[in-house]
Length: 328
Ligand SMILES: NC(=O)c1ccc[n+]([C@@H]2O[C@H](COP(=O)([O-])OP(=O)(O)OC[C@H]3O[C@@H](n4cnc5c(N)ncnc54)[C@H](O)[C@@H]3O)[C@@H](O)[C@H]2O)c1
Image 1: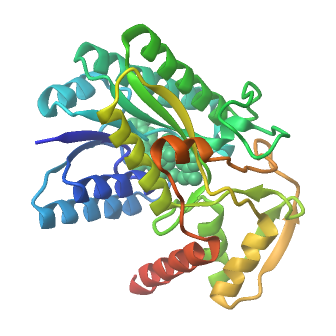
Image 2: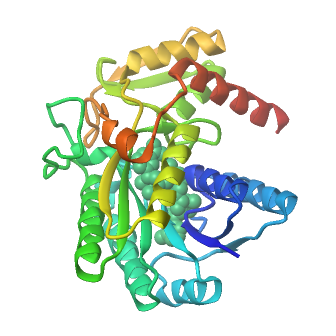
């Protein structure tokens, strides 16, 4: 049995990573505290779909409903299942709430990360894919963003915790020869997307013929990346780490195609056949003007090649959304 330890397996991206690993012939053990940052029933559904797939494929999917800061539980997981690697996604993910609760973000994101690294060290488990974020680039003026760019100017506590985790990843590589990749995800979307993220929010409000709050003049832009492409990049990284040693690296996983906010609203409206009602508000603190990935490093080293165009991805999201909420 080859177990992979995926933290955050009930989350939007985490449950998709779990399913892909099952498809690839691995068993999975996960740790997720099912917190109420958003509707917990969505997390239950996410992990139920993992369990269903595991059953169908006759593979194992184990969930520990606990916290990444609980050392004893992580010890139990690693001791019991002897995973071959860790994919660490379980962190506080929102940018704006991190401004309200910086200490909570430090506690979960940084302490949680170091907690896992420490237990891994004790049990001689030294392969980790750490999920970082494009938020690390702050409001850097040079675009597209490259992994070699200066990133010491985060504009949210969330981004500062991601940068700190990358530093700890590098520290454990230097001190204890951990093999680690840090994957900087660029705004991920697709079916099951978190309800606090723009595409989900705008779709919900447009379907209800309600007003959409647009922060800024609509010219801010995001490099939206479809969830299947992100999962593909994550699995490529995981496989690379299994095959190689003495590795520390950082990769952008994006789509190299920033879409302006107003353009995004128009694409969703067109897909829904609605006329959006837009209320313009000032830009929010912590929000960056643009994210734009140069993913050539991931392409060269991992063979990462994102495929899904925004129109197609939004169509898939809207179809999923309608099916789900028509059903209920
Ligand atoms: N969604 C994006 O656009 C995006 C972009 C960049 C980076 N990321 C990163 O990807 C990862 C997954 O993001 P997501 O969008 O799937 O978010 P998500 O909130 O859906 O998933 C995170 C999961 O981790 C769990 N979790 C949170 N705190 C925990 C704790 N203390 N102990 C145990 N479990 C805990 C949550 O219950 C949740 O199920 C996060 O690390 C996030 O920062 C996401």
